[in-house]
Picture 1: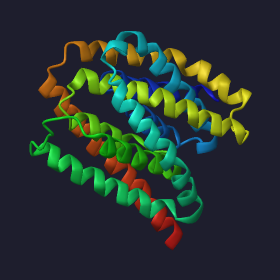
Picture 2: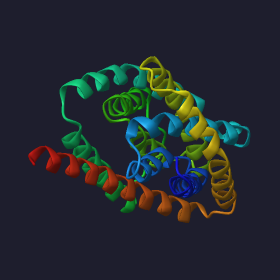
Picture 3: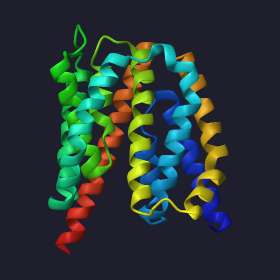
Length: 250
């Protein structure tokens, strides 16, 4: 990369890492969306997934005691079932309209949460597995499996610390799995690993700032911030879908 492109990439990663350190999610979509303006997706997605895993592992010691393991196990089981279905959809259905449907569903869910709708107890086994299945379908089809899991935890009585910790642990598993698929396709290269190493300082610095901010965050303020972030990510996803449809029409 040129110096100008390298500085731009560091700024993008640093900003996305602040969001990730504070909320526990959002890094991949923010980083990929901004970097793909100047680099092809095949060159940036593998290093981004490497950074996702590195970011999650660096946070793991501090959040281990807050992870909701039962929910993660059931979500993971559903994700394993849903992912192959998503891969099939990827090969069969255009991604652009699926992104618009996803964005619409997230915005509707956020609307209910914003109006104060929250569960009084944790979802049962069947509902948890179904949520994992939906996440797996979205991850396999679009590479965006996070929103159902985010809504699952922040619509539950688990609390913000447990929700954030469980999200981080969940993404360690899914991002590692995604890296395995990318490696099998020959997309994990030495050049991508070099980019990962070059961007790690920006990643760790941004995440440290975000995680430090979370420690002093008010739970109600944090929840409101999460909803705003979900709206922003949904809008970005919807715009990507609309852009894809317009491109196909032209």
